[in-house]
Length: 143
Image (cartoon, rainbow, N blue to C red; front, side, top):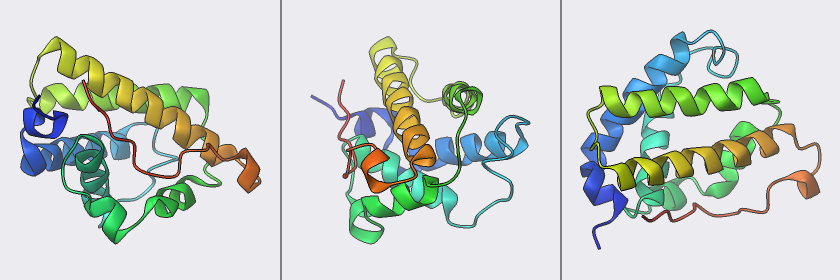
């Protein structure tokens, strides 16, 4: 079976998606607190994470490691409203990026983003290591 990475169009398509998402997040009044300024490496890191999750190269794990993403989210105190808006903005970016309209593909991406946003929210609110989500590696998402 073709991976989500291949079906999406590979690295180039995912990079375009993450760039569109990031621009939307920077401009969104609900997400602005989480994305106050453009970070020069953020789109690349999002791309690496999504690519690896979707069955592409393992660059995120090799170059950053999962601890990196835990640390990035710690202390952000992501609210339910921000988490839900993140998902909405991300799913909107799929259309703008012209990723495949295939229903099964879109559902897999939606589930991935929902799951990831819950993990990020939990980690953002954790005051101790025990309160962190137990996930310690990039999840490998399939159809």
